[in-house]
Amino acid sequence: MSKNFYRSFYDAWLAATGQMSETLLRHPVFLKAAKENIRQAQAAKKKTDAWFEAALKKMSYPTLTDFDALAKKAHDLERRVRALERQIK
Image (cartoon, rainbow, N blue to C red; front, side, top):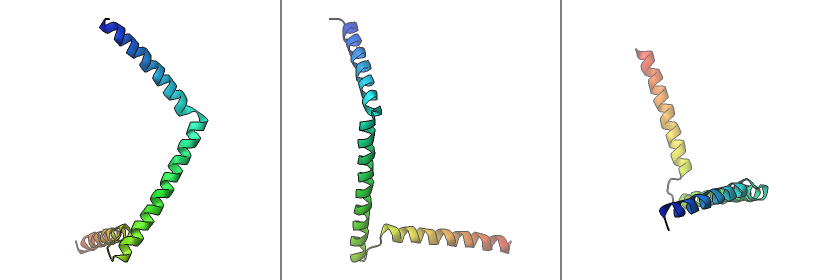
């Protein structure tokens, strides 16, 4: 069999598979299930993050919240220093 035969078979398979996939991905039942899956994944991540935060606090390790607060303070201090430098000039 020639390369063209296999290529035409592959092209037909690709087109049919693409069409079926697009139909599936746009189907309301699939979209509803995907939305619920994402919602549950986000809820699980929130719970996991809270669990890690509590575990780190119990071990007296800094948490992401601590780092965020520290970064905000550093940013605020940089802004104040720049403002003072402008006043001095």
